Amino acid sequence: MRNLLVRRVAAVVVALATLGIVVSLLTTGDAAEDAAVGDCLAASVARPGARVVRCAEATAAFTVVGRVDGESDSASRSCERFFEADEEYFLYTSTAGGGYLLCLRRAG
Image (tube, rainbow, N blue to C red; front, side):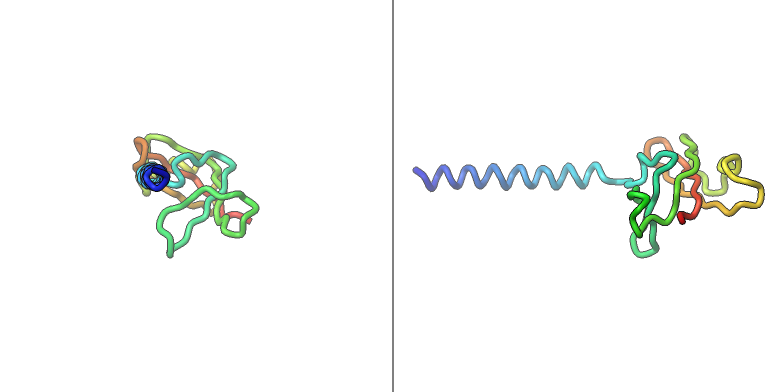
């Protein structure tokens, strides 16, 4: 009787853990989708995409200066309004959630 109870509890634990992994995989498609002005992003060639990190982290490569929702064209000039005429800036584009542009300044 006790072994049966232990097996059932173990089966429930395994099922819940599996469900948690599946839900996690389904909800983490774009790690920068919720980025807002003032957030910092880590990005690298080795790990495609970008993700929001604490600005104090060594991996923080960019600061979000502006966000343009509903647009994902990498040739867009929509970010120019957030920078001086001769200032270097970067774009992060995504089609997630209807598309968005993140207007970025190099951190540091």
